[in-house]
Amino acid sequence: MTLLMHTLHVELGERSYPVYIGRDLLSDSSLLAQHIAGSQVVIVSNEVVAPLYVDRVRAALGERALVTEIVLPDGEQHKSLDTLASIFDRVMADRHSRNTTFIAVGGGVVGDITGFAAACYQRGVNFIQVPTTLLAQVDSSVGGKTAVNHPRGKNMIGAFYQPQAVLIDINTLHTLPPREFSAGLAEVVKYGLISDEPFYRWLQEHMPRLLAREEAALAEAIERSCANKAQVVAADEREGGIRAILNLGHTFGHAIETGQGYGQWLHGEAVATGMLLALELSARRGWIAVSEVEDFRALLRDMHLPVSVPEDMDAAMFLDLMAHDKKVIDGRLRLILLEAIGAACIVDDVTEAELRTLLAP
Image (cartoon, rainbow, N blue to C red; front, side, top):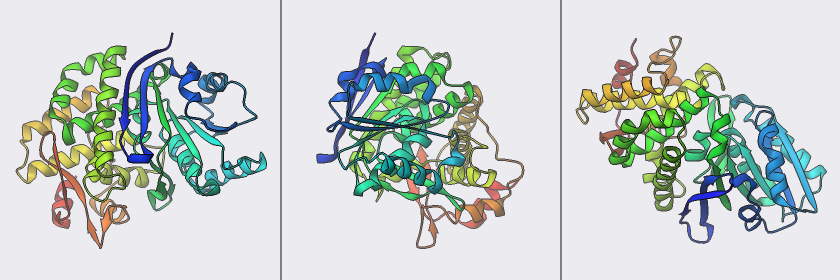
């Protein structure tokens, strides 16, 4: 039975769009149909998700003149220019026009690469996000960031390109492996840390219910996460200012992902460790209490997430990888720290000495 629990809007003028959150939304033809203008559709998924959900999405589309299904290999290591080219090869071979609609069915990798393909194909076609992982539902599917990775840096090649809609079906979380579910929770907690202290306290209290995947708790956490992100994106669509706070922990995390090889650490795992480093640095500056750092460390352990950097990554390796981060502007590295729980700030005055001390074994 379809149950629409929440609908919120990302307010971006003519580029505004709805985010639907509910149960069995993948089977709701009315939600999909109202956001598809033409008769051509490209469904992009991966080899893990496609057998679970693509047939349901295709059935919800009804009769279409042309439906192309593209199944990508699974894993962050395939979020590349080569994979992007394979999407273009298939879409062009099937002769899709400018009126086609791309639908991303999967996690963050599928959503990012499908969105970038939609941004580029014939200079831009419509696309819809159908995120099936917790991380994609609360983070990458909302906000219009699309990209592929480069061997020297994560998400270095991409575009800001908004979807027509985001359909979040919480039932997909029941097939998500525990490791990926925990990784998604890292991005949920991020919103409380950067701008919503009451939400952070709610998460501390309700984490057992979330880990048990209770439906009501999941819907609440997803809605509050998406609402927080939508508010930031509406204020700064292209990350010229305040939107950067969404990157709490990401500069450290991207260094871990790149340094370990894409796919070895899940994005949420790397971000969790990165956020812990950001909180430790905030405490060293006297902005938050050491007890808050330890409370967060304990919460990460409860969530089954890593609380230390990889043993084979030293400060020199971190500094080299972070120098290639997108958040380096005019040679100055921007980091997101916390002035308090629920109050993030953007800083560009962190010294190499501070980082070496922070990252020392």
